[in-house]
Amino acid sequence: MTGEFSETWLGLREPADAEARSTELVGLISGPIRTIRDLGCGTGSLGRWLAPQLTGPQHWIMADRDPALLEHAAANMPFPGVTVTTALGDVTGLSAADLAEADLVTCSALLDLLTEEEVGDLAAACAGSGTPALFTLSVAGEVVFEPALPEDGVVEEAFNEHQRRVVGGRRLLGPDAPAVAAAAFEKAGATVVTRPSPWRLGPERPELTAEWLRGWVAAAAEQRPDLDLDGYLRRRLADLPGARVGHVDLLAIFG
Image (cartoon, rainbow, N blue to C red):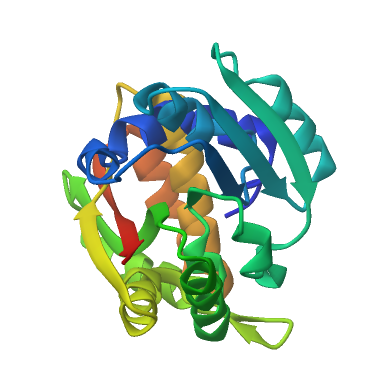
């Protein structure tokens, strides 16, 4: 989706992200949780959602490959007893040694951007350190509109194909990520619990809904240039629909 890593887009989606994530999974994490490594942290929105739900002092290691986003994340964790350091780097280079001091590893809207091998390596790193993982908002590939239009299914199919595209020789998981991650962590010896965490969009969130629609349709059109989706997008933007955008949260616990 165009602009998905910009501060503007990440800020726009933060309230919907916070509403969608599963608080039930947080309740299943056994404590104490003192050090958290947040992978692909972006602006730090997951930290701002999770930190108030954990008790006691916390140290967050915000990890991302974008220095500007890291700076924003580190400066915007305004909670007593919470400290932050940053780590510049890519999630695909994570090792068990990186997690040796972590009580929890987290990420949000990230697994669908990885390959099956990379998710397997991530599970192995967590298993090697025994670190539990809470991974939120992985794309599930399901969108339900109210009202529906006849073209919805074709656009959804094209978007999902785009999510599974090959980039630089890497085949992204897209909506296959939740199932692949669950299998990888179970194979690595974890107990895995998943919960649906859908976005709920509509006229009450006009800016986010419109921006998401533009990106969703643009990705579908890029994947299927034979489709003429301009009229479809105009109709959707002229009368914003309700939309339930499927995501999945995953908790993996070792031992």
